[in-house]
Amino acid sequence: MKDITVKELKEKKKAGESIQLLDVREAHEREEYNIGGAFIPLGQLPKQLDDLPFDKEQEIVVYCRSGNRSGIAKELLVKNGFKKTRNLLGGMLEWSQQEAKD
Image (cartoon, rainbow, N blue to C red):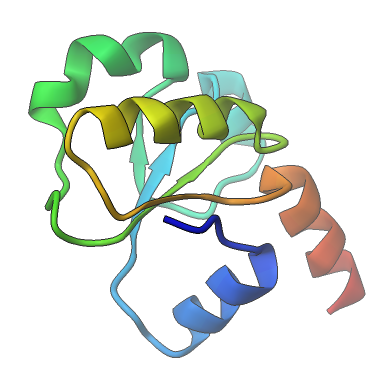
């Protein structure tokens, strides 16, 4: 599934859409800033695939600091049956830059 931009995700949130979010950063990164959702650091994700609180048939947006780790997480999820998984392009760095512009 096509990745998602910060602008697209913000529009979905503003419209009140129910969005499954997965933050794959480390705890100290999440403490600094987050946009919600489930929190499972990328290194722990392979062990927790069977316990994910997501509907495999619904869209999932994965995010991290810059979009690299969430891209890896997306591939892992897709290989395990989560077909509607999208990576947040630019991650929290891009989100923060957009916040500064808004």
